Length: 573
Image (cartoon, rainbow, N blue to C red; front, top):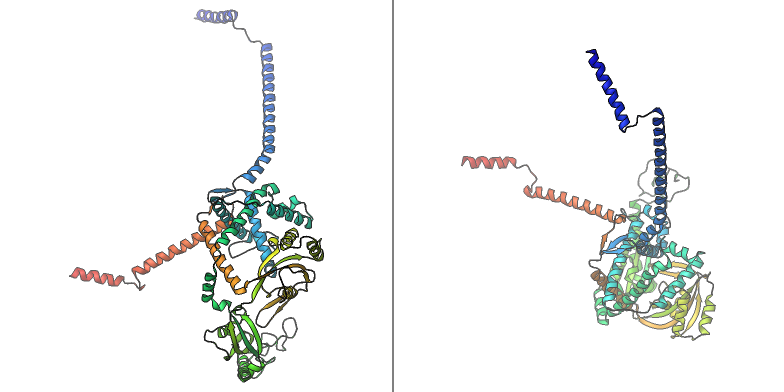
């Protein structure tokens, strides 16, 4: 047995030796060492390659980021920011319209905004225009509306084949930008960005500005076509006489003599408090003497006494009353207006009219009612501020030394930045105009072609009837060219009212379908409107459900017993 095992072992060894000899080398320690070194070299080469590839990838990513800056800028400037009527609106176009609306609103309402402590130079998204919309939301909505109107008008203009040369108007726009930038101490590039948006440049805005100038010319053409005829104006007047007629009347005022300290009719007070919430000694929280507030009984008694005096004064109002002439209904106290503009009123009528808010009575006599036919005036005016480089006298002399025509004056008005084209103001009245300017324009000897420099002091006077008169500061001067008379004020006002109604209807009609079709989630006012609409719909649904339930049971009572009784009766039958 042992021999057989030995023999098998020898046969295996001989076989392995034979296999080695026939082609397979036996691995020595040296061979294993060299193999490990080779593997290490290969790994090092592989790691180096990976490192180099990784480095190349990082460089490539950085290169893409650098290259993407102009691409991203291009997409911002030329890509779709929102869509109106399915048409793309770029960020530049949107910002241009947004800032137009914002700047116009602020310019027109700056006085009132300052009164309410608004500072629209700050973050508009944090200052509320209404209960739900910030000023930013509001201006964005105005911008979208303006874009939609412009696109609708543009399509109408193109369909009509309208075109015009606006090169002079664009040159004036460029000059205005240049002067405004200089006045602000800025470069033109910086001024444009500040005024029209961070992506705005002169070249990017040129298309929008030139189109706006053409649209303005086309709008004027349509306005001329839709101007109301004299018959339309007269018909409108007949329906709204109270708004345009004037009255002459005589008036006296009788004021109630309210007590300045408690009387027998004063309200009873606590020993530790005054009648108006002050301390017993009549001082307020700051220790200063407070104004006494009469009781209702004291006011009623004072008004009764004033009424008796007014009734007595009624006998002398024709001789003692102050004559008020050419007064419009819009400036009158409500009760006084109602009495004076009563259709049955006739000359010599008189009355005593209470003014509850002022604790007084008007003693009034009606004199006349009529439609004022005094003509208005047309004038070209260049307004020159104190800081202007060229003074008013120099501008007038420049005109006189030239062609000295109305056309040449219009050119100077454009040159020196008149807000209206050619500085032309039409349908002027003396009301609200600086006194010195009104006196010159409405001088009875004035003829077309007269020109002068006018200056004045700024004050605002308010009459008892509510009418105001404004006087400009001596820092402001006016270079004026008298262009002649115009229609009476009532005629001009009604014409403008009817034309505005017609043009608004026209814009609304052609704008059908020119709506915001894709805000891309960028406009917050859209989200606010959607939320409000959803809330309104939910409330309507809830109301509908309640109405439906009420319709099933109008009385709201539990009639289940009646139904059971009815069912029981039916069963018995």
